Amino acid sequence: MPAGPPTVLRGSRPSSRVLLVGAALVLALLAAILASVALGSQPVPWPDVLAVLREPGTTEASAIVWDMRVPRTVLGLLVGIALGVAGALTQAHTRNPLADPGLLGVTSGAACAVVLAIHVLGVTSPSGAVGFALVGALCAGGIVVVLSQRIRVLAPGVTLVLTGSIVTALLASVTSGVLLLDRTTMDVFRFWSIGSLVSRGPEVIWTVAPFLLLGLLLAVVNAPTLGALELGDELGVSLGRHVVRDRLIGLLAVTLLAGAATAACGSIAFVGLAATHAATRLGLGGPAWRIPVAGLCGAVLVLGADVVGRLAPATSEIQVGIVIALVGAPLFVVLARGYLGDRS
Image (cartoon, helix red, strand yellow):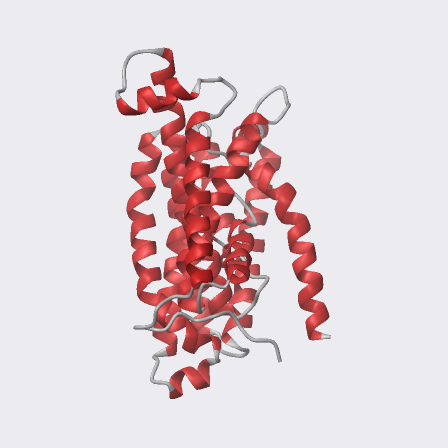
């Protein structure tokens, strides 16, 4: 029987491999941050980038770095961490290695709210849609969590997935109906839904930051319970855990993190899935350690994909949601085939 990932025990010294892999991950994140600030369709020499970072001014390089790239980098960092942590929590609570935060309905809830805001209130800018998307995501996620706790016919993870699928289908039908009736709404919504860090200023960051921070705080509180929950509800109870409460805290964290990230940038699929599997492969510890590692992996993935989209040989930038989908879709197929093969 193959050995599982090494677990860092309280009071024990981490192995040299854990330290080496952890340091490499932190360096990868720093490299992604520097690349996001320095690289883009408008070239700025490295000496100029370092100069304006030390001392902002009124030059064109300072405007490009501080007004465009720094907010974009900060948002990409926050969104990547949020989606990575949300993905790890989702897979832990559903005990499904193919689960994604979108199964809670937050993406479809945000999309439905944005479409209604565009159609009814005439909202036209991505920043103007953030508040509506956040409310829609939180409402949809809350409905899924409440219904999944009240319906106890199947295993909790299965009930959650089925409830999320039903709510997602219902909201998607409303969204599609409005888009079919109003072409103008379709044109405005198309840019928001693609998943992008472009045209999101500091006001977007300040709007979603409190929800992201609250979600991360709940994730930190919930992380120590994941080891017991992965053993199953009955064993979790026998180990002294309040399983229902622990699951509610975890799912609330997922709703806040994925909802705020979707509200800020639109739908960016596969980040939670890819980041969680990357964290598992790195093997830096048990389920609790998988949460922060998945967050770092998610940040590297989002920032790296955004840089690739900026530098791609195209007439305009390729949005981060498209770049990640090009990588994430084949990854999902590979993971699904491996998962089904292991079960057969």
